[in-house]
Length: 558
Image 1: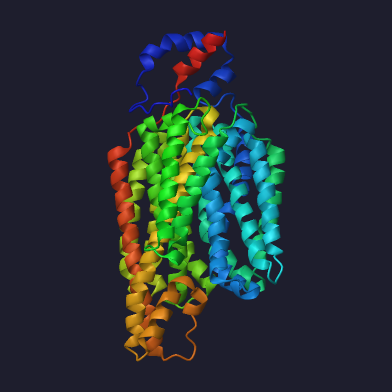
Image 2: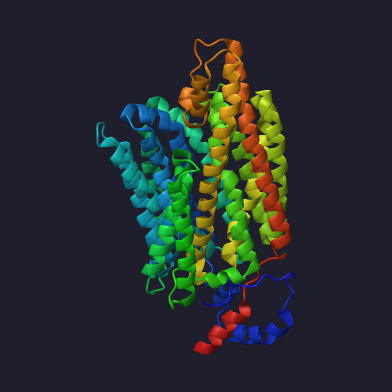
């Protein structure tokens, strides 16, 4: 593996010694090719084709982002219609996340070896087929196993698709345009995470099956755009590290399993800790194997680049907040604000507004000044936004919170695309999908950790807050305790308040708001920690293409 591109503090750094060699290079290579090499991507694509490729990749990954939240909205309906067990309904969500987290690293490497366009196509088709099968789940005893199996297949195909799609976008744009391109990519696709609850609320009024079938027309559009744009499909044949694949898949699977099941097994359960500790042990075994095998699954030397290592950590930390926010905010809107699922989606729309606007700003900052200003600013903005939002939750007024929801979304919008793009920029072009597999594994791990830990905190707070509110109105303590637990796990049950005294309903809504407030204050703390990591760890300046390395390689083969 060639060394990762260095991040230099100023564009002029190292230019003097490179000029004679670059002059030699310009004299011998056609100007069009040289422009591509100096941008870090080879011959440059036409502007129209680049935009078409970008549109194709946005449609390809759109399904995976929507799916992160849309299913959670429909779960109460799915559980009721299919008569799923409580554990089974949880695995409709967890099965997807588990497969996605476990296979991301393998998907990234496979895309670089077998061809990115091929893997995106396979992923899109596989995801659409799995979605159709989820929507066709039959009723009866087979229903639970059927829908969980195809949810796992959805996660597996998404893990194949996403790293390849990011690699294609990065390879299609010159270095100085990648920030803008990836801002559009992550701004639209990431923002669709907030659209999921809105679409889910409307679709489930027709049939819960529609939340899966909606993926089919999106997949068809993606396949047509891929066919028309014909994006990069260069293949770099190499042996695949199957032992490393088994180790990292098992490691991520066990860790995420322990985290996700902690709400069922409990943090005091031996099963929870055995799963997590076994996963960590497999991570150690994976690292030891990768450092000595000649054809590793992941070239861990990339972590010697401080910028890449810090940005991977930043992405993991911000994901502790990003995906969990949609789940907890949606439940809060339905329980404390008394909204239905569609109205809860509208509450989250303000997050989407802030996210998309800030993502575009972050992309332009990346192109002009590098990643650090946007990532640091995003951490600070997110910390302030979540802190102020948490303070407003107990007002039980969505209007008073809208600005702070948008502010929180803006903080994450500044960070997500910027850190992801800059991390990939630090890798050689032969490993774009591979390093995307690393950064997205960190993101999924962070999201799983956030859902598990923050979910446990919410349950604990409800045991105190909601239970006290109910017992103050004369409800027996045992009954009050069971109801308090249900508020974090069963939104439909939590909203069932018909026939109850208004004072009781208000006190329970306020108690749940206090529980959510604790979670949001923790989110503000996580974003503050992300700010500190970024300001202390990220190098300044833009990542520059290593023209001298390209020249040296050309001289060797001339």
